Length: 87
Image (cartoon, rainbow, N blue to C red; front, side, top):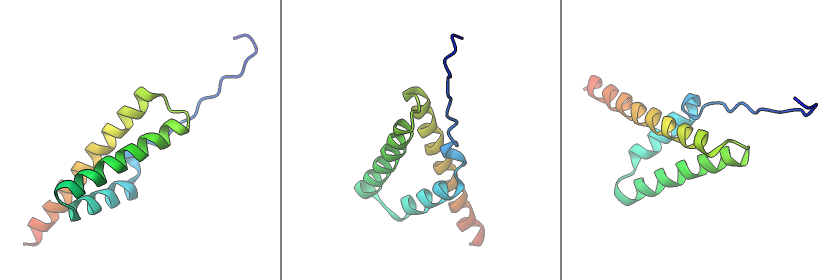
């Protein structure tokens, strides 16, 4: 190193933001068709932009958004599994 300070920012993983994952799954579950697509795209794009604005590299941002999408899909499975168990 030549005396320069290198700073790194750690980003809390989107998929680990439980409240965000749950809220997104519940909202998405209420919607159908175009409204669901619009909500989903808007949410994912906003999260991506948030990460980019904080200095997150694009490749990392894309991976974070994909993991968030996966977490929301699993939350939807869990929500519907609870519905099936109740009867």
